[in-house]
Length: 274
Image (tube, rainbow, N blue to C red):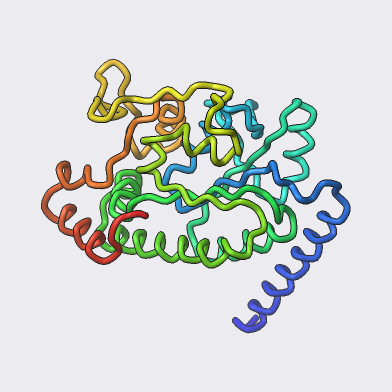
């Protein structure tokens, strides 16, 4: 089959899925979903931390304990399962529900934007951001250092977030762009905004934070973090620790040689996170 034929089939498949999603929305009562939260953003920008803290505040999310090494780690169901998530939330007596889906390509953002307009047009959208140099370094620690990949990751992160900023004005619900660096310094403030909780009211559960300047997560000898290459184990441990302030410029003091030069180049090209 020619490339044109494969492209036509892919288009027809996407069109049929759009039609099915539209029908699902019509058949499901309460499609506004103003108390449904989608957490998204480029990977390694704090989406797991955001998901974990919202869950601690009573926001419902699926947990798949069968055969899972970490039975309290939420399952990340696609947005098309919004009906299933909300039904389970109601059975559990929860008023808020959420799912998390990282978006690592522009096409994924566009696709998810279509699903949002069809399935959850009034949901709350939380988009996580992070300094591009710090994001590239975090990904390199997981996958191994490669200058070309670090530059490509930083560039893709910018394109993904630009696509989200293009979509945001068309979204009927609340949209929160949250930088990891700002969020880790005032997590309670951001959680109140997302959950529309009055500033003079306490959150359902207190947020445990670490003081700025204290030992970073993983430095304590009695409780080290798993190796970055063990991504699932590492993010599970991180999501259960106190929220530690994240600094945009830590890599300037920890890296050297080629790594430092490449990260400086990323910073020069893209600047810092908002």
